[in-house]
Image (cartoon, rainbow, N blue to C red; front, side):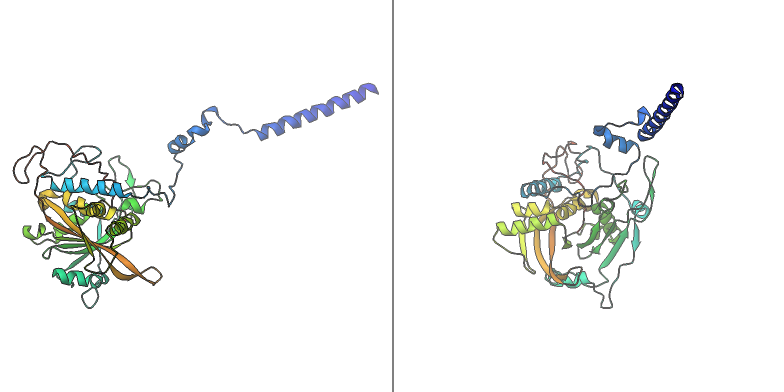
Length: 361
């Protein structure tokens, strides 16, 4: 009897032990040693394991400060006066030369809508400024453009990249000598929530817009006839904040045309040139000296026009007009002769950040 009870007890203990082992095995996953990742190395592991880390929609650089904007503007003015196009600020290499074929490869033209009156919302909004400057408000002779980055492309790494649907639009009249930048949504801005974030080789607003200007110009005289550069309906917060600060420092307020003019000899003018919207204008003339000649920015006029927000409510639209004039070519390095100096291959020490200026207008 005692042996039988002992046998039952041992059997019961054996069953309990077996159940315990099985439950323990299920509660601890079988993980290979090489797949264990220390918490400090998770970010690196996630990238190498093709885990998509989507940047936050509100992941923006810190606000542009007044001092930095002035510093940027000084750098732009320095580069404008150089006889030669400065090298890339990060690599020191010459910047690429883009052609109309490149424009056709990466960007697709779309229809630009013009009303029956041969005017658009933009030209009507800027009518007072255009009239004062004796610029045409009608199409033709004005020409509108809309360009979309809607084509996939193959990168230097051999990988296929999807279209970004960045888009630029505006109005040009090379005979009258003006450009109006309307929508400016860069490929980099449009893919900020994508993985990977991407942009085609020809991506900068200043390059795409210049190639369009060159295509619209009827002759060499029109090509170099750049006098006024408008940034229409500015929505970039950094630019608007710097404009507000420039007005505050001079005891003025944003008003309708003729607005307030700031010379580039003033910190206020340089600060506005050093904003994202001003920087695009600077790179337009700095990076295309071979075609445009040496040009510089003389002043910027800021003003407002009545507009409507997305809900149809009336609001003030910020406008900026940059006046372009021939440069003196004083910043010529070691080069000699007009527009043909070789330079010293070095960039002026300005602390200028090129960055990706083409956020949005």
